[in-house]
Length: 258
Image (cartoon, rainbow, N blue to C red):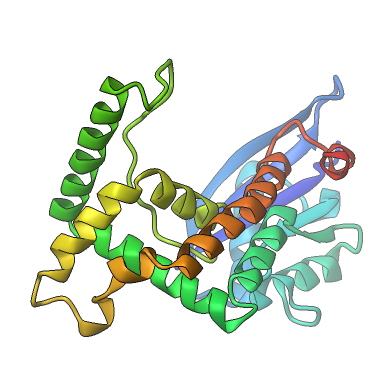
């Protein structure tokens, strides 16, 4: 029986492997094979690690029918990438650039498409970093948000129910963390008052770089709020697609229809 897909992910000098295959009953099964340390991230070193993992599990390159990696040059390179080295041995091991990763690259490109958006996301990144750069600031932010939520609930301004009003904090923007742009903006919006308050505390700290000062003023400008609302609408749509692309029981036809 052929196994249809192998997926690799490199974090620093650690590479993880998983494979997907169709069982005898026709069910698509995905299994984590393991992680392995690599001396460097060259395509040759990655191929050697992949072959060693295959040998451990009794798998053969000849039975491979698909490869799924991110868009790094050492992975997808047309002439010397890992996918090309594998296809040199097995031309049927077709390479597919992860669709969810492609979508994330589009989001990152969108956030840098013009100077106004680029400056906006620079400010957002600084807001998230300053608000959660230490355990003390993070605790203050969470406590302030909790106080504001409780006050609104008592006044009947905030709906309650199972799963609502969970404890949250700001997450840092990441080019490779799927959905981080949308998550960060949505949490800034929901924690607006608490974020304003914690930034006021941060700005009073003489150790904070001058570039970080004035963030409260920027947040309260029309342009910041307008761009945030606009990007929330756009990123909400891309986030829904990203979640669909990552579902184990989803296929590309359903994603396109969605």
